[in-house]
Image (cartoon, rainbow, N blue to C red):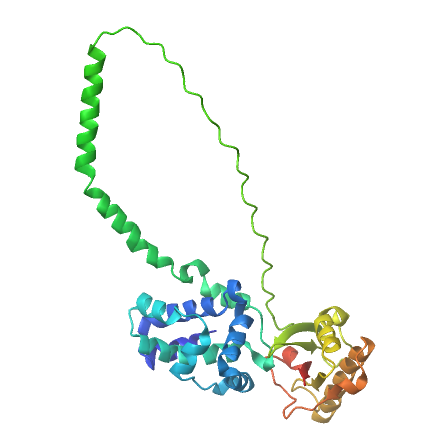
Length: 330
């Protein structure tokens, strides 16, 4: 899945055998659930002034242009990422930022296909990352401190040993003296009130990973901070999946709250069969989705049927090409 990126980092950027763990760490940090997942990372890039660059990466996945170092460090939002990677892999900061400037556009364009930004990564990417804890921010910094404490403790050992011997000697001598037993009154014991244990924080819902389906389905996502949909169809069919109402709820709610927004609807088809029939099929599918939005309460004049420049075979699989995209536009 990441061989091309790893090979480029190893050869063009001189990372060698460090290229693979470099990509693993970068993926883990880009999709950190504690910071909004993959969608949150892309949103931070946009917020850092790289919105046009991100749009270009998603529009042309095969030609995602590297980003300059100053823009990258300002927009990533992870202030320690460059320093940590330089320290962990033993390479210069300048080489890290150059490698990130190549790898981040390549990864964003790899997963944000068709303008849709997934909240998280697919299962195969999670398998590639492995143990996320190994790539978390700052875990290695505590190790030297622990070692230092252990080392400094060694200098006290002779004094501790001498004190122990002295105490044993005094104890032995005191047992040799005969004395009358003395009654003692036990001191009152104060019991501190029990302190209830803090409540565990509520569980965080896992990210929803957008996976391209094999047949009819509806997938909800985000594009430039607004809800979006991908509606997939069975081969030769125009019927919209019954889950459309549920999956489109966020988009419909957003349109109801923002009356100046319109839904742009574009149909696509796979490359099999007659081209003319496929063109009609793409349009019929777009019209079917348009009607579903109207049924959900969206005025028809707020929906636009827009034919894309390329309608045939626009996804990696035929199943992914049989779809309608719904995006919002001011």
